[in-house]
Length: 164
Image 1: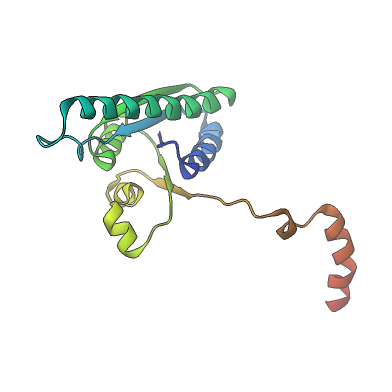
Image 2 (image 1 turned 120 degrees about the horizontal axis):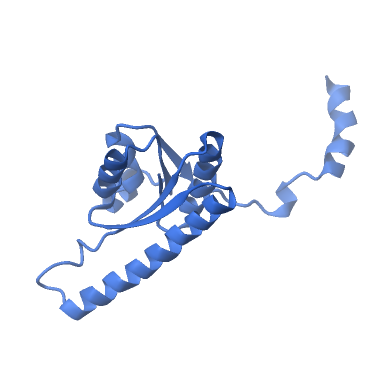
């Protein structure tokens, strides 16, 4: 099961999850949880809440479709799932109901106060899951001047070997 929110961290998680699923030819569930609980109050305008729900559904459909396309391109059976409610709880409930072998989530790597205020979904899933959880952090692309080309490796090889 690959939980996605459409973020870069979730895209990286999807790539890793699909690679793992390929090893055992596992079915991939692409899951997005619409969390409108913070908007669902008697103080909120009903029309606004409905509009937000529709926007989140659209984002969820796009995010899960992206994962599903990648899984199908890898030759895997896949299914997009949209759920509503508390994200961590819904992810864990779905994993248990479907008897998934692994949950894959993206993680932004928040810590301290930032993590406490955001309520980190990936951390809650990791702490409460009955199956293994792979949390994949967002991967940053370094500028080209930090990368070594093949030519750089060839130039540096004699220097390194002389020091040994």
